[in-house]
Length: 283
Image 1 (spheres, rainbow, N blue to C red):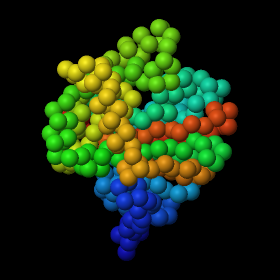
Image 2: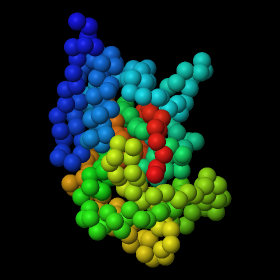
Image 3: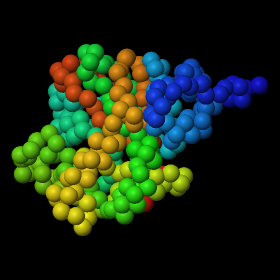
């Protein structure tokens, strides 16, 4: 029998409502033999942890491609896809470190896009000191499913305005006007508060790009959106990953919020990321 015929996905839960730890070897993962099972488990669990798998950059790209359509962020001089470095240190990442400050607050990537990315895969090259620099995740499928029938009926009728510009006010309450207008130029979109997925499941579309519920005052919008964030990020639905060198964590961006937790930018913390193209719009 071939390797692909013998291999099955080996995993264990991290928490009841979110997260599973994958126990397969690097070779088994790179073979693509368990790619379908990984996709199924990702949708069910929200976050998958591959502890100290220690992919090289090329292996992380190759592994990502076994799971779906690779979403290129960077290419090398030959035009080949490569990983994207993630750090808040402006000395290392001067082009986007300031923008990445918004990642310190709960969000979903790509709410401004026609189809938000399906998943991100983040691996650790250098962690910050223990007790800082974790990455937090919150399962918005589980958060929605735990709502009362009355709440589901109410929230299911809401549309919410989203804009990348709204993230500025989380870390800079009095932003530079040029920066504000540059981020507002990215656009502002109206999305359902509840995402009805092709799978039949539903999740909440919230986070730091959400700023106003259509038809409601800023006062009421803030109250409702703040409640929903607190509800969705409570202990039962959330998981904070403490990084070790070589860890890779993959999350379902369509039903999971995430955030980087505070760390000293001078610590040298360095992650590298790959992504999977989105496969459905928010409806």
